[in-house]
Image 1 (cartoon, one colour):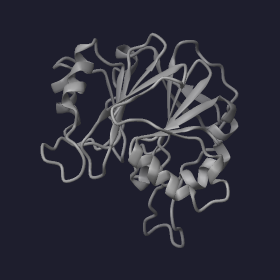
Image 2 (cartoon, rainbow, N blue to C red; image 1 turned 45 degrees about the vertical axis):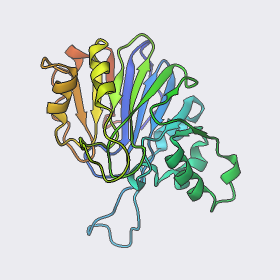
Image 3 (tube, one colour; image 1 turned 90 degrees about the vertical axis):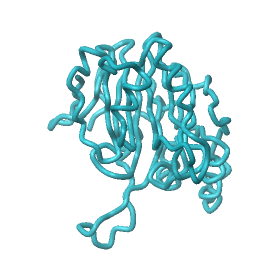
Image 4 (cartoon, rainbow, N blue to C red; image 1 turned 30 degrees about the vertical axis):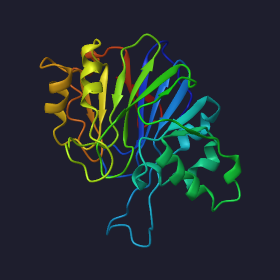
Length: 258
């Protein structure tokens, strides 16, 4: 894996370091004009093929080498597969963290066990709030129903591009046992405002029908399911969203873009 590549101006890069093709260890990078935004930093869960392994964490080799260009990490909610790796990986990254009150409190309780806890810059964002100080990105949160309080999806805008909807974990539930209902009004408004560049989605049940419901019956753009889902709708990714580059790594360690 290498950091020696040329940024294409005004293109949005999507680089999952965990959470795509497997359950857990969620960590996604968005890159734009030389800067990286991280979303989530979760642990994974070993299976029977991994004896003596207690937990899994994403491989952050790439972003460690790019640490000076990492502007911050936004956490979608407080489940372990989204924040559980922070206490192990944050000392190597030392980036500002952004989370809702409940998620921020959970992170602080984990960090409190470590000598470096007071070094962490944790910003508390209101539910449904905005993050305006992570330029060149602008992030707006939308509340989603889930099995934990304050789960948020992220509307991520970079430059003059249409937004990306990073859903986090979610469900459509009119009577959630914990927390509020999914803010379908805000999702519908997002579609009515001119559409989106891509949906990076987790908890993919009902994904396609939900996207069509809120963003129109026409081609909804690129759907990129995570949380163990197969990347089975990248067809049309470049035609629908030509300004997005999906960044992965070739056999020789060089980056590939589509």
